[in-house]
Amino acid sequence: MLSLRNFWRRHRSKILITAGVLGSGYFLYRLYNAHEQRLADMERELARQRANDEVIKAQLQAHIENVQLIADTTTLPHAMQYLRSRIAEELDLSQLTERLQKGKGKPYTLTSSEKLELWDRLKILSFTQMVVSLWAVTILSLYIKVQVNILGRHMYIDTARGLGSSLLLENVDLIDRDDQQKFLVSADFLANNGLPALISNIQAVVTEVIEGKKLIDLFNTTSFHETVMQILDKFMSVGSLRQWIDYLMPEDSGHYKLGTSSSSDDMILPNSTNFDQLMVEARTVLSSAEFGKIMGISLKVAVDALVEDMEAKCQSTGASLTSGMPLAKLLSRVMQIVPSLLREASQNQFIQIIRTVPEVELFFTLLYANNLVE
Image (cartoon, rainbow, N blue to C red; front, side, top):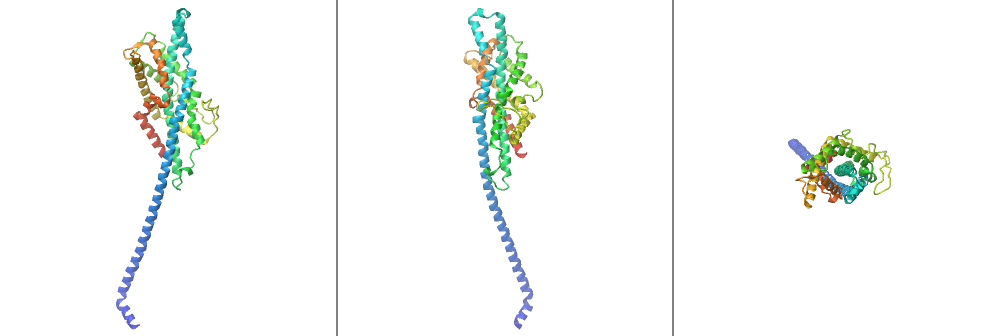
């Protein structure tokens, strides 16, 4: 016992220092081990979240692609087919052309004044039919693209809400599919409700621009291009700045009757918060200055394509719009170009050309990106 005490007195400081060092080392080891454990747990959690995120992103991308597929294979083709039939109903020129053909074969069945009146009507209505078709196809294709981007935005937001609790897409409260369908079907509003007013207003502008032109006046590619652009510019400047939106969609989305659709009977859309929100957002996009610019660019590109197609069709018959042709002869070409404008969406060169315009592609990229950060 005495020797232990002597040992303690002689080595107390060394023992205490050694114990302190060992204790500190053990404490640091435990602290380091706990830190490593926490890092390992965090890495496992991050890996799990990354895996869930990848699944969510894949499901989200698949959902967005599905909506885009529906728009490209169902909504736009259906809307185009229905628009084509409605324009044919509202602007049927067959009776005019038949009377003129009969008058040509039997000269004495029509007086000179009657012939002139028929030609004047054909002149106004053929240009009206062409411009209505051009405007409607251009705007409708842009509008449906806006719809797809708005739906994509809501899919992103609804999915992002589930990230915090690591929910997968099927467990996230997305916008009701019935509301999605109603939103896409609302693209038929133009053909159902907006077309009569659209035709009437464009016809008034066509009359103002074309009425003073004689049937013997020569038209070439430049004058034809200028005439179509003049009609469009005057039409777009008539009334309020965004009056044309009312041709595409109702002002009050919650209380309107969608009219007779080619795919269903009359449908009354109920007051749906989601549907109303989608329609309000669509109107906001259409009312923006940015969309106005894109619309102007798209119409200009469509007119350029129209003139090129007109010249190609003229050349295929041995004629030439570049060198000029009388207005009377041009009218038949104008009527023949309308089916090309209203062709099925997948084969419609005008829709494809508009989609590939760099400014149009950038607009929809920015639209979707801006929606993501709202």
